[in-house]
Length: 415
Image 1 (tube, one colour):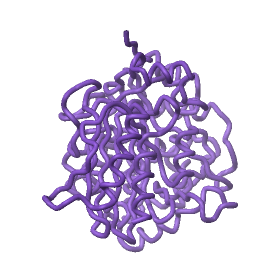
Image 2 (cartoon, rainbow, N blue to C red):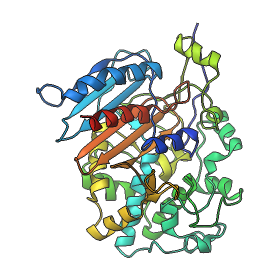
Image 3 (cartoon, helix red, strand yellow):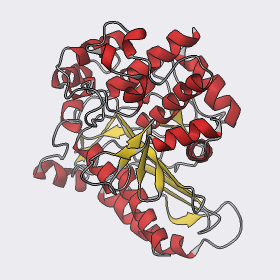
Image 4 (spheres, rainbow, N blue to C red):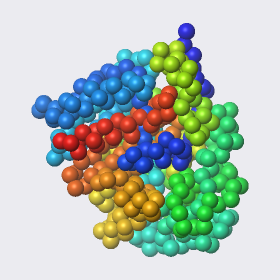
């Protein structure tokens, strides 16, 4: 007899242990589980798969199985190393149809890269200054006179993330369909004291990017979905990518369902791993993850609500890292803002203006109830890696996408 682990629910990527561990590992995370529909690499042409793909394919398949991921797609696009696509599992747990690169996944905090890009565009156009205090737009922000737009972009405001709140996490479990307003999210964040004075340290916080969403609406008089469509999706031809309105929990056709083994409180708490007994039950197929695909994403808004596909994210990775939507001066300023998360480790992971840098790769990862994702690009080798998974966290607490993309990165480095 099989059982579901929890009710479906919704949420945004928080700075939990999996997130930080993934950043430290080289960028962000993504989880995997289930059977494989295709453990062999495929290519967009009739040419043989590149050598690295033949080696890494079986390793990815083993990871997907061990992490119990219902579906996963990993795409590598590289003129230097060769292109390959890996597809595992099925769109629906136990189904017959495997995922494709055109299937929709919720991409969580990869949304932040788009939010930051729009803010930088507005600064480039003179509609705002990165030195503006957030109090100019939101007088209710604690210590807002001393927190700049740039500090929000760089995760150096000191404002606590609303997703850290266990009471909020329990509310998500109780009502996954609830539509949350930005003001409700900010009220949760502002109820806690700041973690540090602005600009003195780094802390991942979704609160920063909710505020940036409000700023862009205030400055332009347009809605967030309009801004994303006009400033990001349309210029790049990302026709399959959507920023939903807060009351829209639907998924476009076709989509991979998103699953989660634990409750929101467990999955996004300090220790997301299931108990030893639950892990064994999951491995034996006696404990199945719950389908959280339809949970309302308003909890993430401009911090993590976008829905996309692997194909579109390949386009986005190049535009983001190569600066296709910014002028050269603003792109240079964006790259210069990427500073080490820990000053004591100058060669460690770095963050700035909605991008993470790890080794030679730039990008971001994302996690939202039921899904985890990663987009990274090495501009030196013109290599892009996109990993999407229909599972938030593996039973043993791993993030599937970071595990899958890490394996690919390591293999490419040895090629």
